[in-house]
Structure formats: structure tokens, C-alpha cells
Picture 1: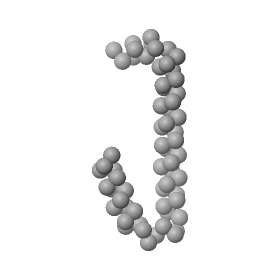
Picture 2: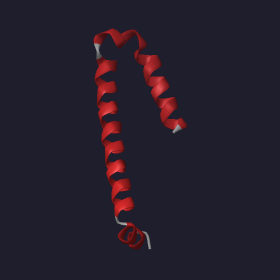
Picture 3: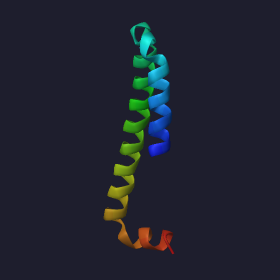
Length: 61
């Protein structure tokens, strides 16, 4: 995660004068949507594992 954070810091430092053009907002909205989608999938998986613990344990063996 720190490597990704360092790359993002470099990108934001490079693009700082350009924030007013909306590029930052565009990429932020895409990243936010992806993260929300991944969290939604994890919630579904967790609910499924809690509902069917027998099948979930078989999948991990």
C-alpha cells in the first residue's frame, strides 16, 4: 500500500497546478466507485459465508 501511496503522492505533486481542470475529480470519482464496488462484493461474500458456513469451509480446504 505504501508503494501505491508514494506513486499517488508523486502524481498529485505533478498534477497540483492542474487540479482546477477537473482531472483530479474525474480520477477520484473512478477510484471511489471501484472501492465502493469492492466493499459491496466483500459484504456479499461475508453474508454468504455467515449464512452457509459449511460450504464456505469446504471452499477453503
